Image 1 (cartoon, rainbow, N blue to C red):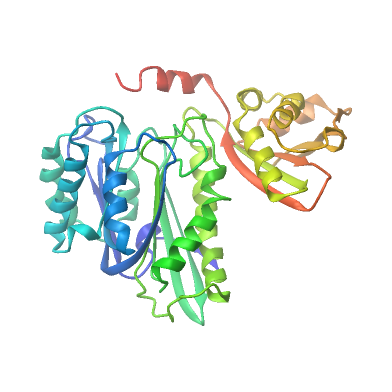
Image 2 (cartoon, rainbow, N blue to C red):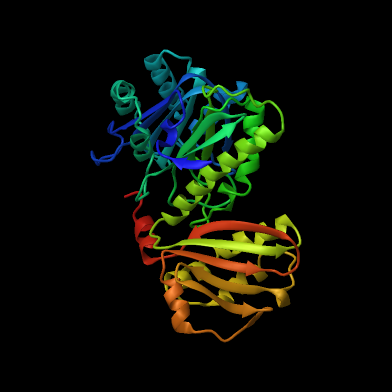
Length: 403
């Protein structure tokens, strides 16, 4: 398995594009994206757990009920959520792009992201679709840009792997910077692959994967209304279709996980106002559930996030977050270290402080990527969660997000 270029266009038979159609006032910002498969593809998706859901999610769930899709259309700048005519607008988006592509509207995944509760005018979308389709090609980067909101960088990755000696490719794009918090899905993610896999096995692979990837990312404690992760698999690589839980599915899941972990790290590192990517690595837990609970609690702690922003090795905040997590742990066994490219420094042993160099700790914590290593010394299970530091800029961004 190796990292390759191309994003959602790396796999055979997939093209993409992104344009500015006029939803967003800034004409330099793309606000409409399209991903298209030459042939109908197996499809799987997971959605936000927020009871307030964007209309596109309702429409997409209906369209994917047969397990297949052929295209994804997504706008940014407006979430199409809490609108009286939201379903109608989402269906019209689907119909418009289906007519342009000459495919069935029921084979369209529809997504929106942006401000909640603002009316969405279909006119700019309708006017932008012809150029969106005309520009279809190896333009995964344009599609990645078109789904961004407060993101400061586009997010895309792809890998190649083999199934029964046949080369397959899988790639994805994502958006996510704020309103990101477990559980599912915490962002918009679109993944494409030319691997042949049945809808049932594709859904199994995705649902299994998100438990340890997208459900382990937190930026600010808010779960969005429009979150979705969707995978399309068109089978054009030519491998024997994966139809059972076997070694071939395991290989596919490893490739999928490589893509999703990369996207998780990109999303966490680009959190609103963030200056650092934080990773909490928990080991030595009695159960997988305990490891996940501890990792999530640490990565979600506002005080820990603020300490990391200030490069302050305040390990007591890590212990505090573990203590209120509800996890069944022996606090007298816990070890904590801070790790970055500048090295590793133990700061807590058996639940108590130890002597360490504050100067060395600050040097380590001034780096852009920080690992908070927690050893519970109570078992063999582990888990990882991703997040970012909490900065002044986060408040500035969200203080006037709508206006």
